[in-house]
Length: 183
Length: 198
Image (cartoon, rainbow over all chains, first blue to last red):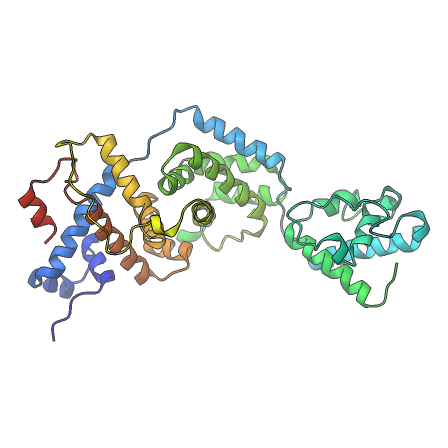
């Protein structure tokens, strides 16, 4: 039974890496031979299609643009292990205990919420029971309770978290709440 | 697997970035910005959008570099980000109906007997930019970025066989879209065109 070559084998023919069997078929099959020739002709067009080269100084401009955008972007860093996020969460809870709820607003509606980065996976204020803790974390009064081994400033540490780290922190905080800790 | 190991200079720059040394990323930008720009240009066919997409691709790469583990070459990883950035951009700008279907139509008769090189380039770039998504991505990465079939498959989440088949379809559609034009830029005579299309 006569069957034509599959497209991936025909591509091998175009690239000149097909086996003898495929070559014998193409030599004997006008249909497959025409398709191979068609593809080879198209390769000629492809080679002719160059991208207009920007002026040489453009690449320096691009590098500066990228560098500038990085300044405004969150810092790149390796993924922090879960225990680090848990430690931050623990520090936050510890701060709540030390300072007491009277020293800082605990109601999410009593004070404007901490400014979370737009990429944060955390839910909106009125849906997230963990947010009051975050508000306390970023309050200046609790900075002294921060474990220096992780961050010199809790608020900077939290705001600088990546998407995944923010998610882990939120999960850890929710776990603490679910375990019965109250504000 | 040794070919997937990042170049030593890449590795040092990547590790520095992962330690938070932002300046180290400049090395990677300097090394790959031309390739990324050209890749983006092939998708959008204009300098302004290609420039924005290049910048956006590098920014996304920097944000994600903490998760780069060296399982593939950095360039492969970066191209994948760039391809996704371009696809998202096109999805937000274009309707699928603007793409050529597999049974691509003839480009129609040409007015000029001779096509200047830059005109031919523009014509081919437009034809490439109208190919179906996977065919276009495959052709750009394989032909213009000179990646292996395996690397293209890794970027597109596909198999080597599918990559080859998509590339073959892309070339066939491109040939049909350029019907009536010889690779050198000359319009084919009617009988020559017939021969090419048999």
